[in-house]
Each structure stands twice: as C-alpha cells, then as structure tokens.
Image 1 (cartoon, rainbow, N blue to C red):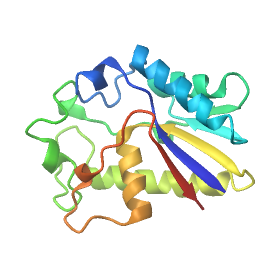
Image 2 (image 1 turned 30 degrees about the horizontal axis):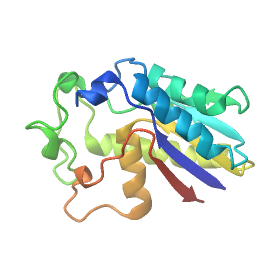
Image 3 (image 1 turned 120 degrees about the vertical axis):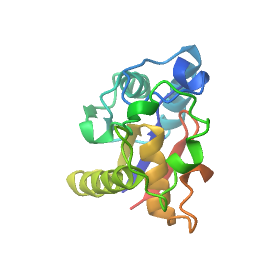
Length: 178
C-alpha cells in the first residue's frame, strides 16, 4: 500500500503566515493552482480513494485532485491542530519554537498540546492503514500539523523534539510505503 499524505492548497491565512487551525477557510487562487498541479501529478497513479479532512481547504483540494473520478471520504480524524488562543496570530512569531517542541510538551489553555496532536495523528494513520488495507493507492489530504506528526512518526522523532525543523509546503506530497 502507498499512502500519499498531502497538505491542502494555500489559503489567504497561509499567505499571511497566520495560525488558522480549525477556522474553515477556503483556497486562494494560488491554492487552486497548487491543487491542479497535484491532480496532474496523481493522473499517472491509479488512486483508489482520497480521504480528506472535512474543512473547506482540504475539501476543495480533494475535489480538485479527484476531478470527479476518484472517490472521496471525509474523515474528522484528519482535522488539524486546534490552535486555540493562537488562532489568527503570526504562526512564526514568538510562540513558534516552543509550540512545536515535542520534548517541551507545553500545556496551553485552549490550544492542542503537541504530544496530543502527535498521538492523535499516529492513531489515525494506523487506523486508516488498517481500515483501507484492501486499497493500493490512498491519498490523505490534511493539515500541516498532521503532516509534521506523520513525518516524524515515520522518520523518527528529533532528539531535540523540534518539529519546526520540518515545514510542509502547501500541496506537498509525502509518500509512505506501508
């Protein structure tokens, strides 16, 4: 089985470098173009199913990739990190390094803890792998925090805990053979 983990296309909040978390934003023009590029990339692969976060930016990315030809399932488990009190703030501001540090494991008033996100992401990945084991080519369309978590799950946690070392670009593809 090949699982392609894809971050959604660009939104205005991404372009402005803002934490959007669970705000239900859609793609901007650049994000639409990125998703079209993904569709063209996936044309050469016989994708069995797209599993997507139900938030608009992932939904739109999935629909563009599918082009009405690949079945799409929306799965709440793919919703990104709840940024809580940081939603709408500069995502590379003062809080950034500590916020993405697995070893520091800071508990926030509202924002989802990094270890909770990581554990949730891994549980989701393992469950989807089992649920769709009869499929050969699966695309997950999700958010940067989930992509970061899966990247470090499959490549090993950094010794310093710094998840900020990996910044998935919009519509970046990570391919995992499982």
